[in-house]
Length: 225
Image (tube, rainbow, N blue to C red; front, side):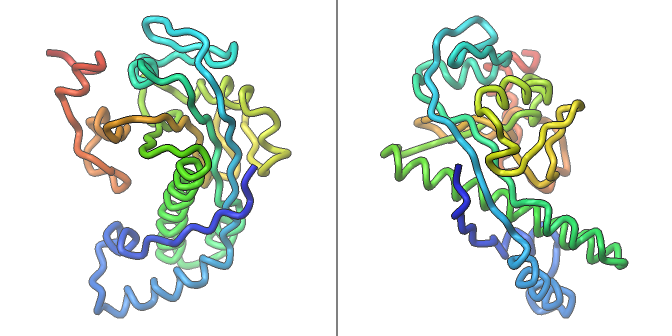
């Protein structure tokens, strides 16, 4: 369990998502909101170093827990050690944002929270790289692709133990995590950086990190020839 993560909020990414000019009065207001939001962040993470027991055509066995995903299986083809994780920034910023009567302010705070969560995941990546002497790490998020749906939260949480006791993240019966600004997945060593976005054709996604790659999707069996 890590409770000393210190993400640096990616201000340029927030401005990009909000489509605001640096000289605008609106952006100056958002900058003040970013400073305020920083005081409500409670970044924490839990992870486990695990080893792969077996591989099937479209699934992997990780310490006697079965994960069903063709994409995950392909990404772990030559990998033996992986790092399942859950990362959160806590509920405080979300609760503060909900208390605002101005819906535009709520939207701005929500965007700030989403970027802060991604920054916290990058903090965890750095910790793992330093601790385990790994040059490159990629990750897959549960529920980010139809091939690895939210139902796979259950085996992930079973692998990590009592996540709620460790960092305050609860898995609901519908497989959503609370607090909402939480992400789960698996870090794995990779020579070439992998992004879920490369296999997702959804357009106009503000969180997109890479363009949809149809050739790669075909290679993973997720698109027609």
